[in-house]
Length: 459
Image (cartoon, rainbow, N blue to C red; front, side, top):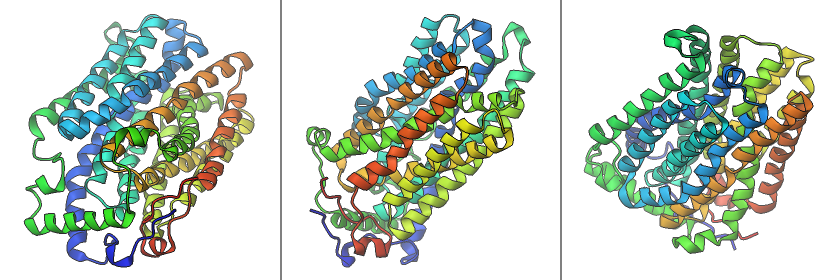
């Protein structure tokens, strides 16, 4: 049965307490810039394979199927290590966990320049998933320590927009490296992509461990960069939010057996299916549309991700303002799914319209993701949230293995990306169906005040 929050106990909405707003503003400027920078580096290192593919497949004589498996096997390593990594963050703190993750994924990205065989390709992509596991759900969990539910979708949207910024930066950067450094020092352009995009992650990991002890504070109570009054305001606001949400599961094993966790996995699996296909095969779709210059491909993807980032932030902000979560996740996902299907019809017959549909697909899919993460926070807390968030992310991201592998196989055997795009669109379209079936609306009181102040009823 849903637990209704009493107005007196809700966390303070944005704009009603200037002192509290100022405290949260200070937290945002303290934590978000560096976390976003790390997410940008992580995302670039994860998806640069989509641009390197434009050269490395012909250089190494890899098939589309080999590429699809290699791109997706990242998520197997991600799946296996996600929960342990997130539980480690709960026990050792954010700074040590983030530093370890960043150093290792950067080193693995650099090692990708030495790939010569499919087996070596698979091993390194698998290890990249192992090393990066825990970063995203760890940050999501970490931000729940600092922000109440009424402010969280906006903050998550801002953080996740870093993935869009990575697309804006990464596309033109990879295109410029592929065309400008091809053959320099005897290395191919794709090798330079992995080298030059992996080194910044290694440096960021070193900075995290040696210089940021006073930035990534584990909890508000330990933040000496907040005034005592600000710490008291934040702690009281978080306590009100926890009370408004009512009883939530704290036990790890119980959270893993919670049917609502598995419902969230099903929803996010469908969403990730579309997103991973767009990331790993987006550059190839642009190429199929007739744009063959790597630099032009990079700029087209950059523009699409720019609008995707804007959609993330605006949709998250509107979700917080209205307190509505289900449709703010489901409708953008549905729009993205329909646009993915449309791309399959338009490539290569109508390149300009295909690129417009691709941009809409990216905007819709990306805009749904930050709002989704409001849903599990309604019924999980503490160690259960650490395990539950990681389990949802890791299990759902198995779609990141399946989608590229299926796309590569269908592309190789049909000579077109269309069949794969239509299959992916069908999976993503199921997102809104599952949301409407499994996720109940917030209480009317919560909706009026801009907070998802109710725990969901069991389906």
